[in-house]
Length: 244
Image (cartoon, rainbow, N blue to C red):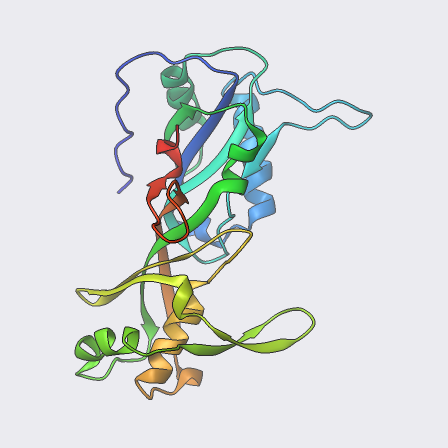
């Protein structure tokens, strides 16, 4: 069932805004470019006064923070827009939810800074996931071994790029790794500087458990995306819709 839209206590006006949305159900199979085109239609249908770029081919000023991979559901996706005029954001959320399809839900809309360095795309630093096996079975003692997995000095994997493959120690990019009932909860580095996919972490964990990776497939659900408002040595993560 869709989560309830977060309550608003007052009308807020701004010329830049961050929109948080959920992606679930069949919409998890829709890629980022189609999601972007979908929200362009939502802006028109919901009568959101979004600003356009200049030049010979103007387009809506809209940027997504770390787009979700195909097949992954989420409770915390974000995109920033620039507005041509101030609006009542509570009303805007209601109008958008009236025109979206099943599998997309607008959670909230908040004003953001005009600073270009504070865009969602720029400040993303981490993301939370719940991951599980879609095919395959964990060994009986897998929950006990989860803590020992993170006690390793290094967790090395082969990370593939378009041009090459290289061995990478991903442990510094795993901020949390815990058992949550029959699933794994993790917080991993996310963004343009460092970006660790949950599937790579699960593959490393299953390899540690001596499982046959060729017989496994995984299911991932993103819980939220965070900015680091602390330092690299003392990180303090906050949800993107809580960044002032």
